[in-house]
Image (cartoon, rainbow, N blue to C red; front, side, top):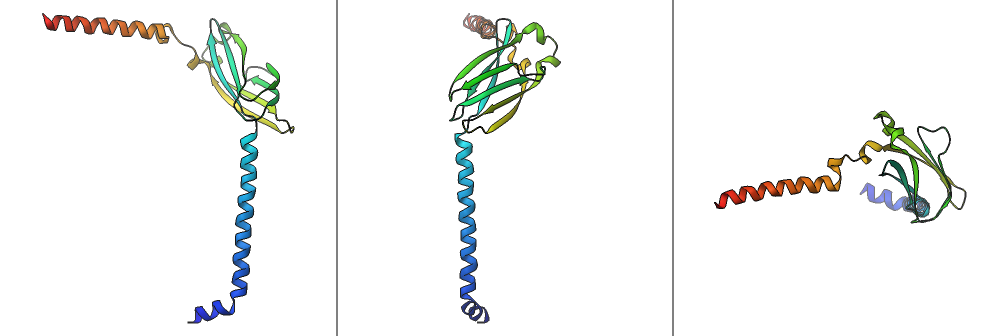
Length: 168
């Protein structure tokens, strides 16, 4: 009974407090939506290391929804940017040579960080750091598709021998 009387006597204050709480919650939701929209439409640069013949390369891809400008790629073994790209459109891929395999003979040289700096159309700057492991990229002869196919063929030959012996 006392609680009901207190609520009735202070109903204006309760409505005011609850309205304030709802205003704060709505403001917070709108603010978070603005942040999410800004993050969703910005450029994002993805870096994929690769190997071809006797060289290593980076495949750069803008996976964001806006173009990236003044892209600088600085591998950890360099003092200044090694790759400079004026503009990288959204969904565009660029392949850039980073070095001959002889440069990366030791295992230590195959692990390094890459700093990626770029800007968007509104001059917002972004910096990403990627850990690169060229050891994963490098395939031995036994790990290539041809090597795998040869191992499967050897196993199939062995299985056919066993089946052939079983029918005799």
